[in-house]
Length: 297
Image (cartoon, one colour):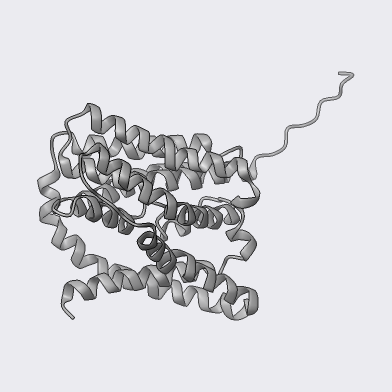
């Protein structure tokens, strides 16, 4: 097995471990959270799967962006929640059940939405692209649904063991991801420099900031849930995005670098939002109740 395949397997294994660790903290009720809340589910789908893709489509149609960037923005807008995002969301006071429910719902919906979206994108670009739903289902099952379900089942059957196992599994998964991702970042570095210019950073920044804003707006009355949907709308699953791009544009070698550049810029731009959301969440949790006025006064 060559180094490239070993790195790919390392990334896949790390994602499975991270998601399994998340499952060790989730109950079956958490995973089905959005199925019992159609209004929140509809707003989440509207933010992630309708409004943001429409913005990206408008930008690609109006502005002369580099082809690799156009493709990267489109496939990222079609991708589900990245499995490593829930840990970041949970620190902002979001409802844990909503975090796990959103991850599960987006994974299930992607089995239908991604093949349909690939057809539409291929048609718009005049390409014969296809990604059969069994292929998408295999990716989603292997990287999200099965490890998440296995972890949740383990917690249900042996909660004390699951509680002790979770931090160990999560740390191993995070360390393996770091080790596997470093060679990818170093290899893609020289390609990323080719993408800088011609409005690349501005276009990425607009998409990220718009995603944060629309997710926060549609997240509902709970501040924590607003932060959860904001990050989920702005930051997407890079592995699925790369799989979609290779299915439609197999000859575009700069697309993976453009996807990594988006993640880097998105990560930097989300830092001020995370700090603001954390501060707002702290204020809301300690905000005293307004004194009740006497009607006779």
